[in-house]
Amino acid sequence: MVPDFLLPEWVPNAHPLIVHFPIALIFVAIAADALALWLGERWETGQEVATGLYAATGLSAVVSYYSGTWAIDTVSIVTPGAAQTLSAHSFWAWYTMVSTSGYALLRAAGLFIPWVRTRRSAHVVLFLLGLGTLVPMHETGENGGAMVYKRGVGVTRTQEIPAPSSPAPDSTRRDTVHRDTVQGPTPAAGSSSSGAGAP
Image (cartoon, rainbow, N blue to C red; front, side):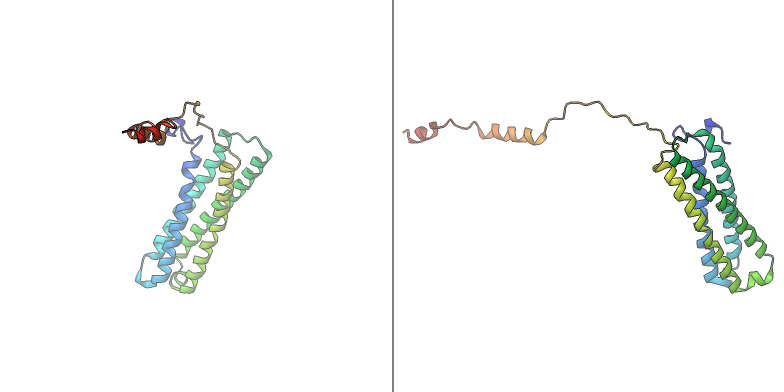
């Protein structure tokens, strides 16, 4: 658990700061794996790089999951809807941790099996399995976002409504008054015609 003095004052726990690492890493890992699949032998260490990124994804998913279990004690769950969303979020987070870390172990083992490492068809199958890890990752993020933005879990209202104040003078009105002053006062009714006929 991260000590409170290391956290910004606007977060209730470390989970919001950790949870985005596996999300970012999984996309980088899949992109690197797709590039390695496309280049083939032209990128000799492509599978190693992709496997390392998948391992980092799995490790960060483990840390993210357990930081979430610790974070439950720092927030208030006051509605049945929030509790239901939390339950779904926890389930998908566990499934994400298991799938990403298990897949990372599978990819690491494949590096030591020659026929898996050299066959393009095996790489295609492994790449598709890697894409499959996006499903629990997406569901975890959807439920996590719903907890914050729909249920308001872990959110504290810090903004205050400003006190009512007199509105600022209308600049358009000031300009109009200025133009009227420059043009001079409007003559009274009837006086303009008599003034025009005077010698």
